[in-house]
Image (cartoon, rainbow, N blue to C red):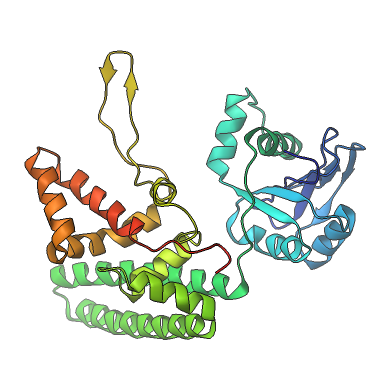
Length: 322
């Protein structure tokens, strides 16, 4: 990691944050729960993960833009991300599983706030992680609504399944009432999502581009905007890899295992599965390529996964700034 960058990690606890500043890189900083330690002078400080604490942290970091690496902790890092992003710092969010595996790879078995801070700082330096743009407030709202919509959709499926087996009048009445409530709440969420996207010209344009791809409707387009905001600003192979649709080769010496997909962003794959099935039925090109794979002995699921990838890479590439 170059000088002028700063790794940061936040905690699941909303109580405190710690930052570690690496001696070898004067422009780097790392945050972790429990306080802040600046490696350049080995000074340790503690900040509350609240408005006053974040203001103090921002003052402690200074005005010079740096790159910050932090561990994803759901809602607990949202305010941190907003404050430091508004200050002009580049932010790198690290998957907690990847962070833990990196710690294991460097034989770091201990897990404390200070150890995690130093580990994430080292991870940011060794892997040269790229910074990502900070989500706007409207994107946070859209993501929250999208997650709520997914939960309601699961509730509706569960209610319908229970309704088929229920016999008691009270239970039947409650399940039907719950279904009506879920349908009403889904309608409210869809209306609010449409409003938020319509109010943002950039998001409205992205949705229009996504919906121009055969098989992608309004719900799928929103899911792709939320799950993969980089889509449209990367090459097709990059998009397939990021979504976990690129086949993973498994070979060692003379042994050759079956390639499979995995990792990446499962939400994108889930959102594109049904559109891919529709495209296979109604898109002549996708239908022919699907049939060729099946006729060649490939499993149907593999052929469908390949077509999901085709639907994804069909999204037109646009410049990152648009």
